Picture 1 (tube, rainbow, N blue to C red):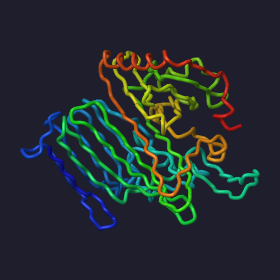
Picture 2: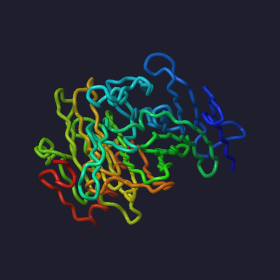
Picture 3: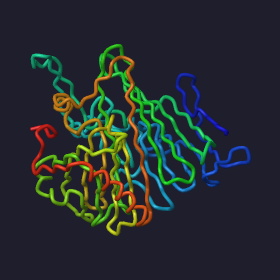
Picture 4: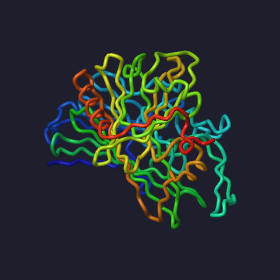
Length: 399
């Protein structure tokens, strides 16, 4: 077994590598693929100037990770098919150019174009004022919050890559990102993105630690955004459900088709559905987005022990405006932190405590492979009573 490691960035030791590429060679081969590679480059020009891109290519599946943008995953390909979506924001935006206070707290959207971006770490959800109350219900502090938190616009201070020849072989990028402030949240994300040589999947393991000497709140949602060719008119989302509810009355009107998608529709108004998932005995659940013919699909598997809730974001607007869907496991639902705290869905980490989130993204490019995943989901659902509420759940949607 051979393991090769390189530090791309370490601000503590002032180490930095601007460009790098590893490929198969005599002293480093992976059984799963001869066509694997890891590369790193720094983008130049425009809004992307200074953004670092680390590409893991396992020979079949490739993904671009963005250490500069909170270890988000910009885009990917699998056997020539694009993974991600076509955002009006065409390129990765350097965090220094994202004013999150813009447009009354919606500025986060000016950098939003990743296949997977994290929302958190101390808060996610809409902009607004978080009101912290004491045990008697008295407001003791107020904090303005912007859309979906800060972590997607925080650069990693340490980035490492690895190639491990054990088994079929693994490719990894590991990044550490801090979201810290004086008299406020002091959280660290350590993210490991890895994929097996020649495989159709990648795994994300995120460890969020409280660096402070006092308890700290943590919220994390994975905004996984998918467009064509997986998303099209007639595409369907399959997910094992304990309970499902529309986010609001607008979503309730189309509850009967919550799992089915329209083609690009100019003027479409986004809809959200909230899910308490069914899971297997190990606590894992999964969602499948399949195309209209059922011969192409993408799965998100996630550990409900630390990601116990799931949001479906339907945004089937016109192609030029950002046609996509969000399939989003999280520690809670995308409401203002005040409400999520009141409902017990804000995680409190004690000093030094770490919470680990795990999920996997998979791609399936045959009717047989898609059907096999759907059979797995059906088996989970058959063991779990399914409740679908016709109106918003007052414990899931703020009044």
